[in-house]
Image (cartoon, rainbow, N blue to C red):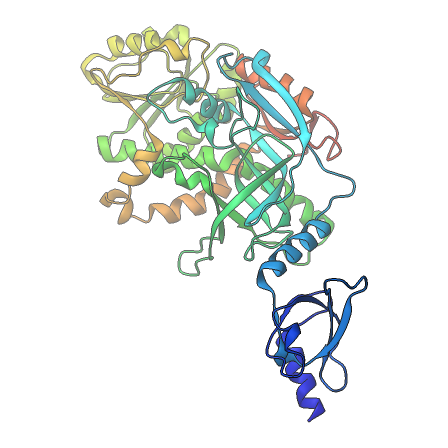
Length: 488
């Protein structure tokens, strides 16, 4: 009998320190309704010792009560659990965040960048604390910032609001680690890939968890909650769970880490290029000649690769004199011309102009040169930022269309050229081959700390960054040496 009582007591879930309310006492009804705290138990007879504070007594009274005469005080329990969690999560030493912010209405030059430090706030219910391990920064990231300057695009920089008035942050593709969690389905130590702010830490509310799909091979995802994000941009709230590799040797681990860095730099770029090609395929059919400006840009290189992959017969690159040798060396274009040679481009075939430069004057020159052979101009920018970009006109004009990635994602679900030709599988399985191709011509460079990041940002903004470099950044200066080249 005693063993049964003890078992029932344990099942009741009363632990030492738990707040309880006394109920149903027949011999001492004056204690019914009193609030107390479990001091010890269960004893051999199955009873719990409960401390009760009685008015007029200096010391608490200890009662030996059966489990049937006590029930958890849920309101007090919530306060108790919250206090215990706060005590458990107390950081020693406290974490200090460092974020790179841009001042509103100050433009996008390096002068507008303001590093900001503040203590990492305490974790809230349903939230996770992300340690931003590293992120890529490129013309694409700069394009996300620039989109806030035009009415045509949505403001990507509003995804991660900064608490200080008048400041905002960019969105960059990176990896992060869950270092603290108050969400039951997101464990500490989970590594994630997705859009992250350029900072050391980010506390984020979790909206839900999407399980991995065995049918499609899609990884599990953690969906963050971001206020004010338009529905067609909700994919930026989803972060892929990075599966931990099995047991490997040091050399394999190093290669896996390097490929992860290339993913940060190239995955979104390659996906955008793949979608641009799909849009071109659907709108123009089997046209076999294309001109691409800013031919040295990573997205332009990816587009040329995708076009050649489906056997485009004539892919022309337009670039600056300084980048001419680099672009020719990639062997991704059939022919390469400088911008100064635009008025002498071959014009004996039907062709489409893919405009990464977002230069209206160059677009007009090509339109006049090609005449009726030009099917249309597809404006793809802002892959390369121009200082006067926000003053240029983006309205649709004769034979001009603006590629909008979010609109194409919706449209591509319904077109036969995508749904019936295995394009999704082709996108997935062709990416590693593109990485191997680019690794022959581009070096990864690590940028550590706010000052080194600001310097690299300035070169990207001013279009002076060499085309044969790609940047993976971290605001944790102790991760690697500052501004060092990694082995490709």
